[in-house]
Image (cartoon, rainbow, N blue to C red; front, side, top):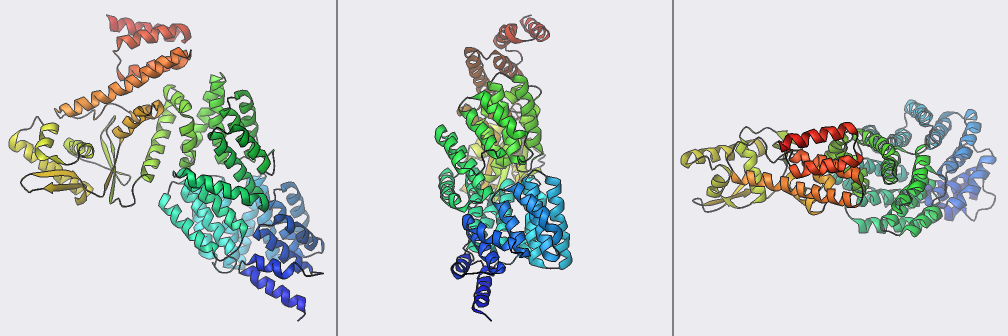
Length: 630
């Protein structure tokens, strides 16, 4: 065996174990490398993150006729975002290939098509490769192409299918040989779990990726997992770690030259700087870091930055341009529609804003990855409030905010929680145990749960006097015992706890019980002036069907109604002061839903309607005012 052959074999062994720096050390100083050696060196540069150095050896290998080198050079063109070149290259070489290399070329060519917006063709090519690998019966190669198809389904928003495919890929991919493929599948699975709001599962998967990264020095794998970690911290509340990871990514991707990673990092950093008010730095970072200024994600991000600078006309133009591109992936499409609707509304195009917002909400209601959009919906609170006030849009926004609240509530449950209860009291009484509604037969059961959640360590006498004052003596005691029994049977023994002496016990919810109570979320929203969230939470009066003669229920019901009414009045007055009379009219209508007989509000509505309402609506408002006055 020649010296070069021995060196190539050593390099191949190191390559198989993910030790790319060793490969580079072995081959860099070799003169007159064979086409095979050039291909191995080029791929080592790719996986270690040195894209600039990778091109020459891969191109030379391809030109020298090494068929595997041809395929890997096409993949290099894909990774660096040269999609047109990559497509032409695969079109030329694929008909000449056979066996596994033909299947590998179909896989990478399909990925090129998918990235270029030719989604159906991309999936079709990858499925051809998948069926071919299944026929070959090689578990690892099946796992690799399965991971590629999973990534496509994730990008398209089909989270269930993506999750299933990633699990299948992980099962087939080894950890020790070529660990980068298993790391990629683990990272993809974590992305699916993050998108579904599965915080604990995502954390567990990300921890597994950190263990796997110890088996390779691949910079590309490291960058992929860093980007997933960043998204995890962005959504689940650690902005300091999110910022730190983005800055780490910035320093790495500038050298890596991976097209997708660089584009994502540029857009994410620009978004972060813009939200902080560093508008110039945001735009500078976007265009300095992004490898392609005309990429639809870059254009969409530019539109969002311009909207935050109140340059609404330019923002609308950029966002519409991005939405016209078939290369804009589904998540960016929905984000762009939300920001476009806000820009249109603030630019005076009410009709256009309504159309864009309706399209966005229809997409969001069908999306399984709804939690990814929670920061945008929180940022665009004025838009959410507008949708809740508009009769044609409010049904969409109410459901949307309700689903988001449930997702975020689930993620706020402490790790040591033994029992998670979500209690709805506004509009109707309902108790959900770990997401499933539990039917309770006694009205006092929900009432007791709510009271103990707000007033822990209550005596039996206090509970009976406050909640069941219409029952006396033995009747009250019997009813309390029935309530106590139903709660423990339906929700578990741990739901209620007794402290103190047996003769004079104090009652509270169990130490492992976490309660998510809608009235407390409503109070928080009102304290924060978040009218949109308050309106979405207030689905009707507090415990409307309660037959208990309880002053506490009546007082709580009136307190919540008055608080929301005061918030609406405050926002209505601000809208009138700002000259936004259409919003003032919508707020008046919303306020009258709380108290249809409010004479003062009926008069305000007529006064505003004289200026902005249609003749038909004005006539109806006048009739309703006159009816109330008579």
